[in-house]
Amino acid sequence: MSYKSADDWRKSRHKRVLLLGMSGLGKTHVSNMLRAQGDWFHYSVDYRIGTRYMGELIADNAKHEAMKVPFLREMLMSDSIYIASNITFENLAPLSAYLGKPGDPELGGLSIDEYRRRQDQHRAAEISALLDTPHFMDRAQAIYGYDHFVCDTGGSICEVVDPSNKNDEVLNTLSNDLLIVWIEGSDAHAAELARRFDLAPKPMYYQPEFLEAAWAEYLNNNKVSEGDVNPDDFVRWTYSRALAHRAPLYREIAQWGVAVQAHDIAQVKSAGAFEALIASTLEMRG
Image (cartoon, rainbow, N blue to C red):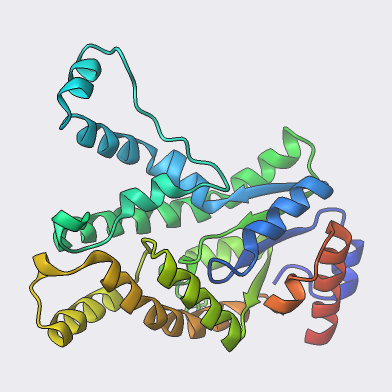
């Protein structure tokens, strides 16, 4: 683990952290604050996935849909218009839209085979984006002169690493140079995340074994065929199960670093306060 003690952290001229946890617990909020208020470079794994590794897939999918409209087809075929993703750190909708949800195509769903294919693409992209972290850490300092670095991971990092394997390539790469920080939510946070998700269900990446089990159980419980599944109903039904599935994985990853409470992160209003919280967490860890 980088920064063996609070003193190591305080004295370090180059503070480098990786934030992980469920979407909605403050990873991107804190990362944006550090970038705005401190000498921190913000590396967004989801942004890297949606631009470097899946940007062409996202744009081609949009073009495929546009080609169904005669007017847009004509304009595209004559190179009169172009279609590109406008993904940002704050707006990852193009990536989510491409990942999609399985179910009835009349309700915007994907066939389960196509859904699995896109899930596999996301897994490969996420691993590559995570392994790019040291490269961006070096660039941030060499090109832009940033002393500090925050890696803002997606909620699905726990689905693409094996924290029980001491030789896991991704976790070894990350923990060599960054302090891994898990933002741990309470039961109340989980309930609030589930409430928000129920209002606006979004595509997610799932571990293949988890997806297959959830899909089979949903079909059996609801006595429906694959093409009759309501996509939003499926991802709503799956969400709480995904939270329960991810919690122990996050906890294991935290053994490679430290854990901070989401309610403590919510109180952080400055780069200095964040650095102090990490120092106190390292002190408690001993």
